Length: 240
Image (cartoon, rainbow, N blue to C red):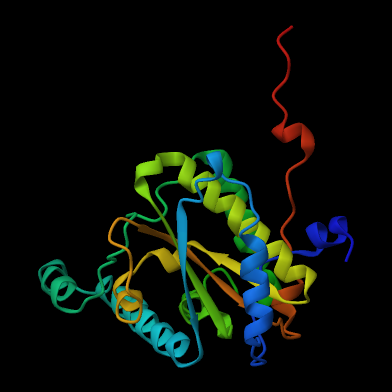
């Protein structure tokens, strides 16, 4: 594909086929992403790549924690406090909360994106059950055969997050060019313990987020692409 086509056609995929990614294709995508620039070429990030049975087990564990956390919200306060400790539902990721309160201008964009997505899916705003079910799909990676979890070294402070973002963008564009799809997922940074069960995580590295990777299926949700802001929205004007 032409680069411009790759950039424009990339979108968040929220429904994947069961078609597996062969090892050579996966290794090629990840190896090419390593060419991404980083601050002084430090590359202060690592990734845990879950495929096959490990992918399924981590997904089930995350899904169980999501439903347990949802159940906590319906409990009276005294019982909630006890259950939060014993159920393992409390987030144990390295960055908590994953997302705080959005400033007004960004909250507006967030709401617009969510409304557009639910409209494509035919989910009404008051339909909490269907909204929860759609959210739950994050934790089984929308059925993707590969889930990638990203970590940064906190010693590099904010530059590590910048560098990881560049790396992830490269990975998403490379996957698009090869006919695959991705979905970057902040929600996959909520619980670290399911990942620790299957990977020897480096002690100093912190979990940031994850990404689903696979072949898109023909579900209508994959047609959705939210509107972007205009160039004028991003440009800072000169002083007069």
